[in-house]
Image (cartoon, helix red, strand yellow):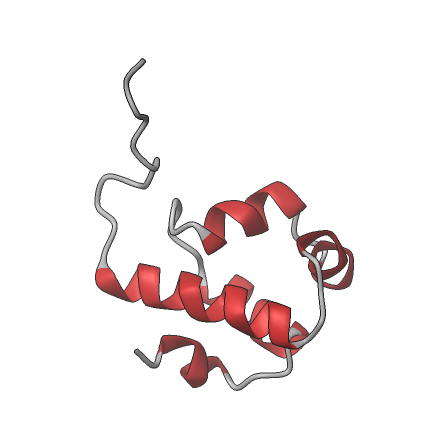
Length: 80
């Protein structure tokens, strides 16, 4: 059986992957599950999962909402 590659948006960029990795780390540091983050932000848990896996573009309003929920300045979620 072939190994399935991790699904990503075809035009995935390094910045999206940096944001995804840092969002996951910040969420965990804030002791929040994806479900809890979804409840705080109003963003569906499935969408949060997709964002943390760099599968979708994310709009600035969503990034701000997520950064506020994990108590990090938005710019920190873009630091390599």
